[in-house]
Amino acid sequence: MVKKSSQALIRIWLRDTAEQLAEIGISSALLDAELILAHTLRRSRTWLHAHDDDEIPPRELDIANARAELRLERTPLAYIVGHRWFYGRQFRVTPAVLIPRPESESMIELLASHSTATHHTLIDVGTGSGCLGITAKLEHPHLVVTLSDISRHALKVAEQNAHELHADVTLLRSNLLALAPHHIDIILANLPYVDAAWERSPETNYEPALALFADKQGAALVLQIIEQAVPVLALNGLLIIEADPDQHSRLIAHATSGGLAHLETLGYALAFRKV
Image 1 (tube, one colour):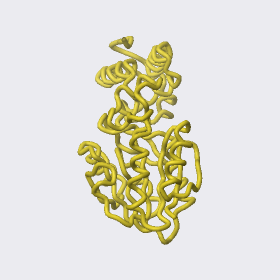
Image 2 (cartoon, one colour; image 1 turned 60 degrees about the vertical axis):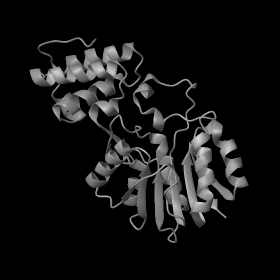
Image 3 (tube, helix red, strand yellow; image 1 turned 180 degrees about the vertical axis):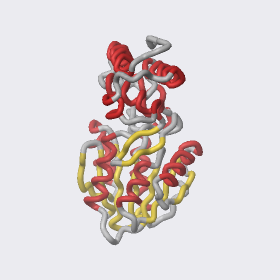
């Protein structure tokens, strides 16, 4: 329970809240407290430290306490503040979508390394918040980008992010590549790859299971997208996926046996080319 007070100085609220978050094992306790209060006051973290002897107004104090309570229950910070930064841009997130992870930025790096001027079409499968496909469009404006997901709620979030970031993309509701056109030049796919039996942080309990878990030790959907990609990709087309490193050797073997050449592994991300 957050220590509540009718009045609180910014520095005292930050200290007390950070201490409580640290007590339950949150390693970013002070940063989380700062982000919660900065979001509530609609100020920057720098402003907080420059005004740490200011009192928090009563209404904002109640809101900040309620948000801190959610974090103490291990609600992900991104859901509390409503956004997450990805590749230098702020994306709206809700409990309908997986929270973008820094490791997924490696997929954008692989896209930059292996895409060419002859690649024109891209589909982001399992788009969620749209962070991958929208980033691909903004970094490579010549690409014609489609954001695809089986979840209507996820597509709504992706649509909002595309609008707010001024990304000209198309939305498609589809189960993987079932409704995707053929001869696509690039497929991005950050699909569920977690086995429900794996040890994981309590925060993942708040994320949509549909976006996290898969059968076959977490590899079922990634194996499926590899199989579906072969007939859909244009010659020399790219498939860029994300998976747990322990799954990589299995996925590479599956892809190369099906007609895809492994180009590069970068962190959690893998790039293949249709040959």
